[in-house]
Length: 441
Image 1 (spheres, rainbow, N blue to C red):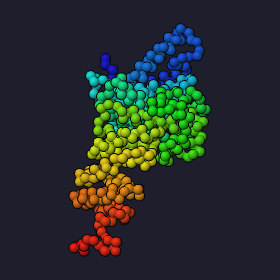
Image 2 (cartoon, rainbow, N blue to C red):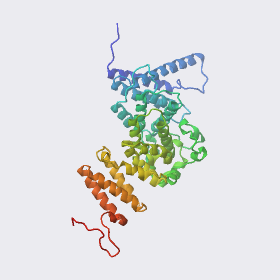
Image 3 (spheres, rainbow, N blue to C red):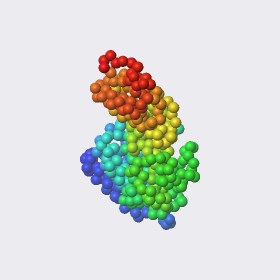
Image 4 (tube, one colour):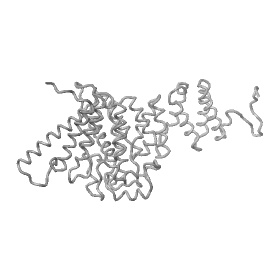
């Protein structure tokens, strides 16, 4: 007779029962990769049998997590059980969660292992992504760290042609990356914020333990090993207060394992985003998603080397349209906080002021940044400010009332701040007499 199909709750109970069984066997050292105790032939066969079926169990969980047409409830159950598996896979001598398991999880979650001739890849459901973020990414720092490592590894494989990603898989990769946030300094010193507690003392092995800590060609490997959070702060300028913590905490972090150093999180965060942005065939939608994040408080300010994003922001800024508006904030931040030299910034900004822009979705962002760019510096030449005043005034004639009111206030403030621009509305001779009579006065 055919077996009765299990309900989602019954299936979840069955999966968790299997996980608890393997967890019990793992604590009895039957699932170790290399046992220090010499075992008999029968014990070795039993151990190999358990390892084989444990791999099958993990593979079944991965298949359930893939973004196919399966029910979302089954994916959530499988994802929770998978993280339960990670908690007991820290074998004796292992100080961190299994990096390879996290890598396989991200591949299955994004559908990166599904080829063109297999099942259709769907975008990750918002509720599943929210559950991943709330239950695992935010509570556990080590999960965040190795997710950054896994995403970067997948991106590098796609760049070098070792992995062919479908369009939906690339979207899922961006969605998972966008859900990752850096921990705060206080979180790194709390053992409860780790799925597997890190070692208490700093060890030399920590420096080269993770493949995610490989340095790019542009970086010096030796200097990064001893890099502390305070060094990053001096090199890159202002940082987000919630991510940096106090100076005392930064100094204390030098004696901690790499898993508890904020500088290592910022470094792998930076390298991950750089690798993902170099992937081929990234759609305009994903570029906009990346620009929104990188231009936010959680973006460039939390990168180990923000200037490495300069080329990306310049290319996006010169692309035109909404992409230019989204890149404006990040590019201005690189210029003012990290000494980036970009001579064509104000020329490109001038070209963005059009009637079409006044009706664009992100027009508020543009005018807010326009006010910052023109009002924050006294070093702008008067002819540059005058050109913007005339352009803004002409544009206001064909803009919505809300935009026209803002433009009038901005123009008024600019004329008051730059006295040389007053000639645009009133010309006087040396004696104070008006050179031109206003017939409407």
